[in-house]
Image (cartoon, rainbow, N blue to C red; front, side):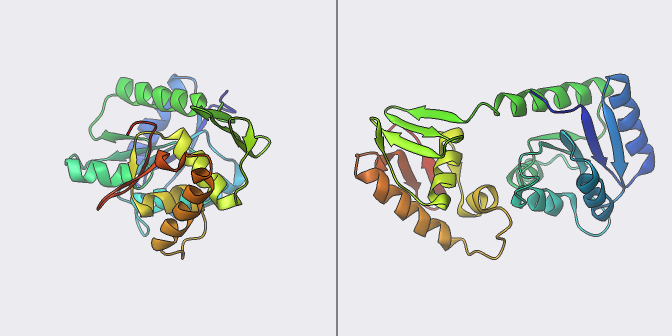
Length: 231
């Protein structure tokens, strides 16, 4: 269930920021605005939003870099982000999504499209909340009790391997690069090298291999890793 209907709009052009805010108000949302990353940080520290609407081009730190920082922070990593930008090339859209954005709206856009996308992203984020109990075949993960079992046998693993497994089980059949896994799993530890992911992947595979489940974590050569029950 969504904790609030409060949204944060980070946009340096006041006319666009006010237009977005007016559109949100008409749809029943509460909102506040920020013109740059520093102001956005202050707003988030004061009141955490249910969603961030983030402009790509901002003075100082860019929206893409800010999105990466939001995803690396354990306190904010679960806040959905919609990128708002004039860029429409596919490479730019992919760059925004890789940075952690949940959706992407190109300017100019209609108020109806904006509200539809906001509601869709919020629905997806709400549907992701009941991820405390996950299962793939006989592999079970209970995030609430922090337990992993295979065929009802407990599987002991470190906290990083647990977080890594939880991320994989909530995002199956998708390929993630090492940098994406670092952003999603390690959070604030921004100085960790990409190859550290390989170390923890090996550890996770080792504990799963005891029960024959190490094949769930697949190496995609030249790209990264994928968690899948399919061979």
